Length: 75
Image (cartoon, rainbow, N blue to C red; front, side):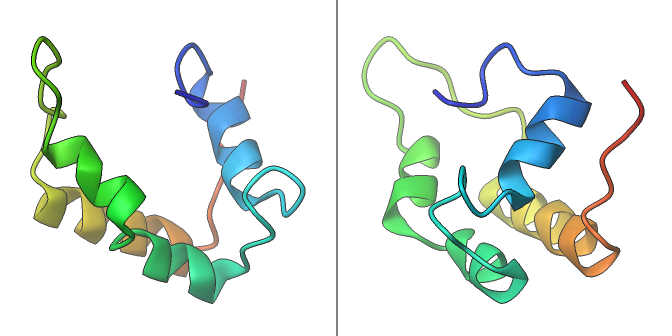
């Protein structure tokens, strides 16, 4: 996954970088939470684990993060 091994700062920067996020603006990033690609994370293949939160919890946190300016924490 493109987010594995990233610090919170680096991941936040990557997620809002148009060159690295599929050219998605903030509105499109909000919509991305319901893409089939993202939803597939909650249907892991055999031998893989579920994310540490429900999709609903993820979407709530994702929306709050974006609507509050997509802050990148300090390194």
